[in-house]
Length: 77
Image 1 (cartoon, rainbow, N blue to C red):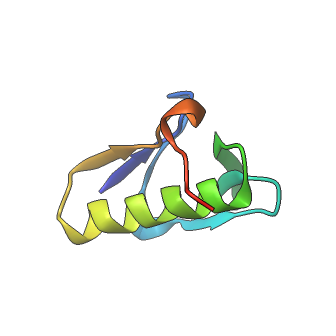
Image 2: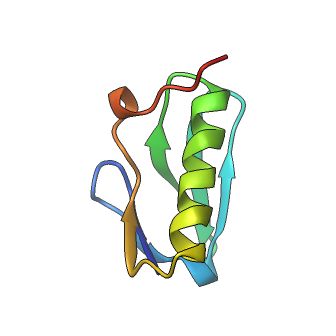
């Protein structure tokens, strides 16, 4: 599966990256010795919700997944 960044500037294979959420609400990936910001969200909880969306897309055999825009993700706290 391909993962496309929120800004559409990064496109990487999910099977070859380390994807992680930081403490301020950004989702990053490490690929080829470099780190890329894939998306920026309002909270760490929102970033974790996006990480779950990516895993669900992979589990459902999607060919690609683009990280959603910040305003399209809201987690009830």
